[in-house]
Length: 111
Image 1 (cartoon, rainbow, N blue to C red):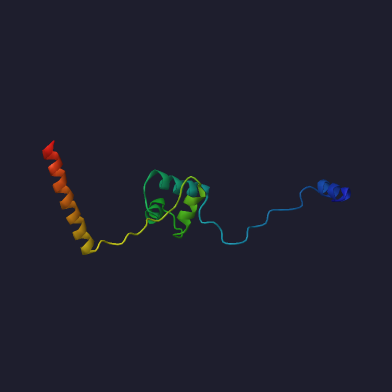
Image 2 (image 1 turned 180 degrees about the vertical axis):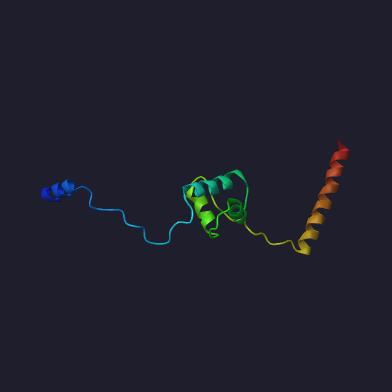
């Protein structure tokens, strides 16, 4: 419990505490820049580098996804890489398509 005398002394002097400068690296974007980044990301399907270039900001590549993620409605994700088809798989697909194309033409001719 804080003594009443201490509370009265603080209240009579007014606010004796001042805001200190924040430690750490200063922000490179302000609120308006953040909104611009979020607007570009939500209205146009752009990649992060394209968004960075079109916004005209000189920021790090990680800044743009962080600003996009700040708006909780958007999700930043990377497209999953798929392995390329090997020649064996291509030939198997063509074979499957030929078999099924012939069965489809038989069904169509019977009707």
